[in-house]
Length: 193
Image 1: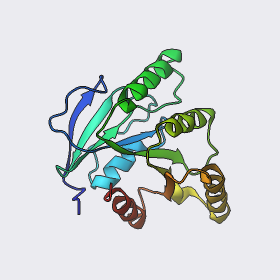
Image 2: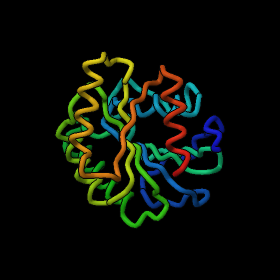
Image 3: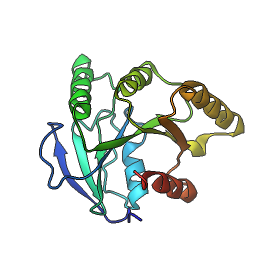
Image 4: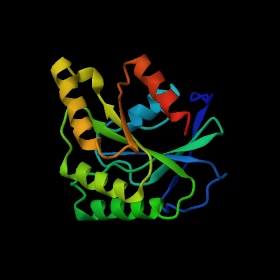
């Protein structure tokens, strides 16, 4: 079993194919700005400040590489959907993702974070189409699940069932940084990769 607490930040990469210290499987973490990527990383590794959280969306511009127990790299991608930077930010994200996915033999899967309280945005739908083109295993992580009442939970499940009915390479899981059971469950789903 992987010891998720044995985690450290390695480096930030502007070039998706820049050399890594060692060749390891890579798990990409991606989602809209402010969906909770940094908070999820910190919860998974049980450290408060391994990944820096920011109240300003669009703060991450590079691929941040985290070593998890000398077993795999968790790769934190910049958030998408942040428009203050204009088309340049969108263009940089698209280029970085295309470069990262292209001929990346180390990429074993994607953790795609979505806010469990909302329908998919236009940017989410665009990224979904992008993921379909690569036929890679994707775990959709529905963040902020602690904010859902029973009706909202049922609506979120229905949304996912409709979205994923024809795509068995996708699965989804609810997540909250305040729920130890959901954190443990996500670790157990990541481990087989």
